[in-house]
Structures are given as C-alpha cells and as structure tokens.
Image (tube, rainbow, N blue to C red; front, side):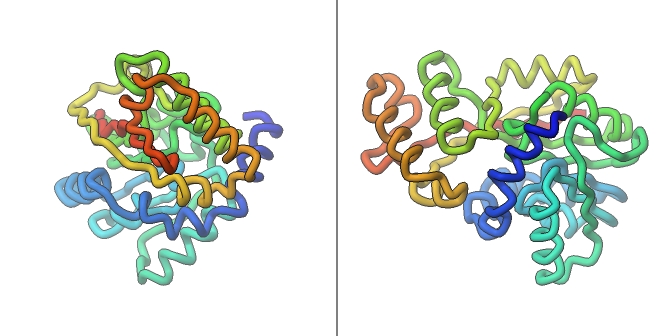
Length: 253
C-alpha cells in the first residue's frame, strides 16, 4: 500500500474516528443482529474484525468470543475503539494496526472473521480477501457486509460511486454482487449464504460524519438533482438528498 494512499485515508478518517464510534448507522441494524447470531452460534476462540472502523462489529462479537482482534489501518480509529471498549467494560478485545492487504497474523489463526463497511475503502479488495482467507482456519465462517453497487443499472452504479467519491476521496468502489462472488471465489472462499437489505442514508449525518466540505456537498446535490428518473428510483433519492443503498450480507467459508 503506497504511502500516499495511507496519508489520504489518515486525512479522511483520523479526525472523524469518534464520529464513527457514535454513528447510529454503524451501531445498529439487521446486519449487526446477524453478526451477533452467528457469533453466538459459533462461540469462537479467536475472532478477527477487519477494518473495524468504529468497532461496532468487534463489540458485538466480543460478547460471544473468547478473544476479538479489531484491526484497522488508522491508529486514531483504534484508539477510539479501545476507549469505547473500556467504557463498555469489554475486556477481551485487542487492537492491531494493519492494512487489509497485509495482515500481521499467522495462517489459520482465527476461527471467526467479520468485515463490515470496510472493503469499499481497500486499495486492493482482492488482495484483502486473500489475506482474510489465509488467516482464517479451514471451515470457519467469514461474514462480509458492505454497500454494493445497484443491481441492473449501470447509471445508478456510476451515480453512487460519484456520490461516494465526492463525500470521501479515499472511497475506492462499492462492488457489485457479481464482483463480490468472483473475488471471494478467487480468494478460495465458498459462499454459504447471501442476503441483500436496504439501508437509508440520512444526507445530513452522512456528510457530517465525514466532515465533507461545503463545496463537495453542493456538488453532490448538483449531481443528484441532474440525474435521470431511473436513478432517482433505484437509489430512492429524496428531496433533502437522503438516499437508500443495497447492503450485502455474505457468509463465506
């Protein structure tokens, strides 16, 4: 991973770590309930949360795992996670600075893996998924949750990527479901289940969480107001800029 890209990610997220810890979008949802259910059923000895962000998936898994490692590229994010874990009284959570593409863990070290709303930031998603496969014991569950590109509409796909990039210059791509399937297959995973849910993004909190500058906010609104009716329908774009995206919940092994 290039130093330039790391600097960009640090600039985007270093000052917003606490906002992700406090984010209601990240702190709840059907997908997090699913993680809790699978963690409870698995009761893993060692769990890994890749690209932990505000740490909500790691906090959830910690209730059922012997130990949880929350990894992230950003020291500021991990410091915020450690403080929040201490505030919650979670004692079995540890943090590790790591890029998804270069995890500092032995082969087959973990028997439960989660990755939530992180992959679209990775510089090389395929490499990150290969690393996830490497550090996961054979047959163990890996839960991947992320926004996906709109299905069946190239225009809506392009529109979503544009909004994401204007809000956050470190955004790489919200991958389509078919791209996820292909990448997981190449990484050596077998998909056990896949569900797609809808998630509403409140425009004000979505931009405030990233501290998006006013000029970029204005550009996002201009793009939204000039798109076709098909795109408005696909993303359920509202008059105030709020919109709705597809989120994939994929279990692989």
